[in-house]
Image 1 (tube, rainbow, N blue to C red):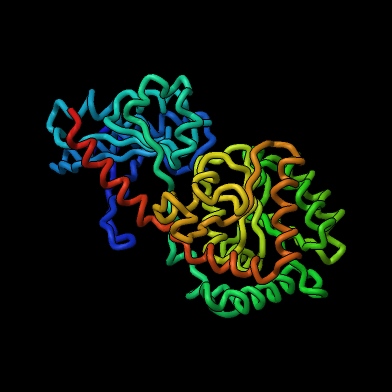
Image 2 (tube, helix red, strand yellow):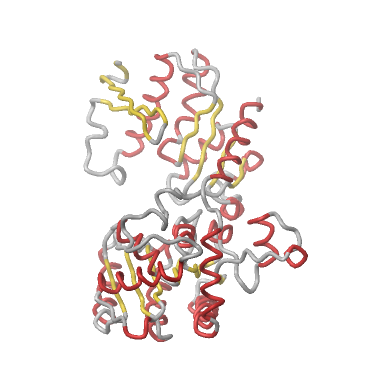
Length: 401
């Protein structure tokens, strides 16, 4: 169809069992080498939002819900109510989800005002950002629903990237074989079969890079091996990690892989005994949930979704029992759903508090540690529960005036 001074092509395909439509304007707005980071981002994405609404109007579609995400599609909310709802696209209600409060705050504020309900990707992150000026006046319709992971994609039981498949009952052998293969891929020594401590992350300030660098030294000092997969978009920061790799990467106890490599990440999650996520802030975080699926014990900073998914083995037994299995008395019910080690601050001492307890547990009671690895593999961090929360939210939006 023709709209906005250009011809717009719409193609359709079945993706993961769902009918999807793809909007392609022929004005070169999206014939670009990068999706984000251009001077005209706002103009391009506002055009996309209105083109999608125009497609719905022209084809007579009346969905129950328009669910837009982050600043890049935030304009759907205002544009729908001002330019489309009065002219025939009358049925939908608008849901908006914030994935990161650090970008596009003016657009986020606009969507928060015009949507019927809006969310962010974990309950704790919702609490942390609830007082932000962009949304503070709209928190009566705001809530946090944690993300989930694709348990078919991230599965140690059916995975061509692992030496052998394994589950919670066979994790010890499956992870041992993965450690062997990971050491070959990273040229690390197999002597003493040391614990492997891993980081799988973009290297940005958000991810706590100062603590990641500290952790590399700390892991080797505690007799472990350290593996990092990821890279820094900032050349200065990447140079610092290059220097770290040159310093530590020749002692056969450290492997640095400065790239994005999803197949390799499966092997790292499987081969790792411990995964580190020391983020400065983390709206939800998928790393810790994926890692637990493979039996890697998370050591995290309690912020955002990390707090909602990782329960400290020493300090969070009541909260873990309630959040994971709905038990109000873990002692009476005999449940232990704790699954990792956590710290609060941004300093090295806070990190060491959690990391040392984790490594002490590994050395002092290997049977307990292996049982912990099996336990965390049985927890459900899929979309099953969040999907129910979203369906309830959709119905609440439909009922709203």
